[in-house]
Image 1 (cartoon, rainbow, N blue to C red):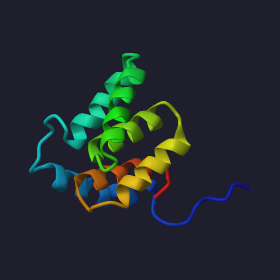
Image 2: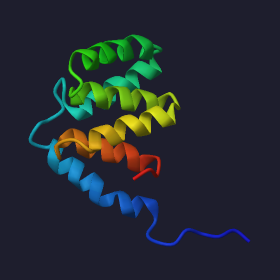
Image 3: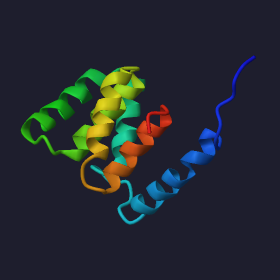
Image 4: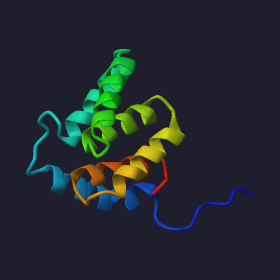
Length: 117
């Protein structure tokens, strides 16, 4: 007999995070360097086979500035999209532990998408 998890469905439990992301992202739009644009760039890099090049660019940025939230989000998203889940979780948690800003919201969404939050 299969045991079903208790509590609300995953989609319902993600609703507060989705609303928070929408509210946080709204004033900033999705211009370059903003979380929606970074996630889109990571997705397009994976789809277009340019993930190593884009990842190297974000890694270089992070080497210059260990607090570069955009680079952290980009690398975490690339890791998630290329199935490097341990790295993705580590980077998302690092970002989520920082300032409570729009990047932290996206990090929490990344964690929640895999059930890590």
